[in-house]
Length: 143
Image (cartoon, rainbow, N blue to C red; front, side, top):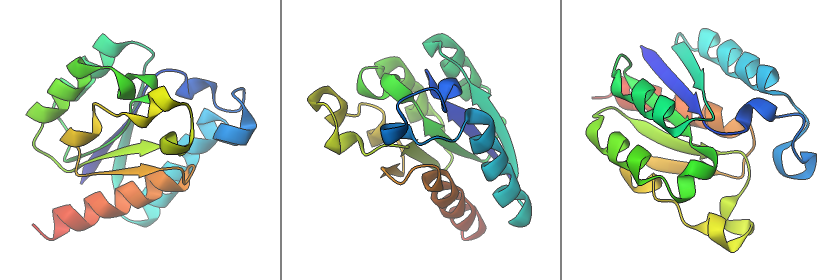
């Protein structure tokens, strides 16, 4: 069972971003935490991070995975192109945000991408990715 984890703009800068919002762990720490959990749970996880909208779209369109966890970063709030790509992909999909986007600036309260995902996990830090993996594994095993 292959699950793709996509991280959008500036997620590669974790550890350098405001720690009160994003925590102090680095992007490498995040990847390691997800990999370690996935291995224990018998999952295979592939990672992709880009600051480029087009590269994220291209990666989603490969459709070489059974489930998708996506943190679109700032693209969440305005990328109809990513939203339209998510609409095409017929796999379990979960949108994840480290911070609670509803408790931040008003422009972050709207997600144009979430409607094309099965659900959204927001504000639980890196643990949100683990919850997303659990959901996808459960959905794939029970369908």
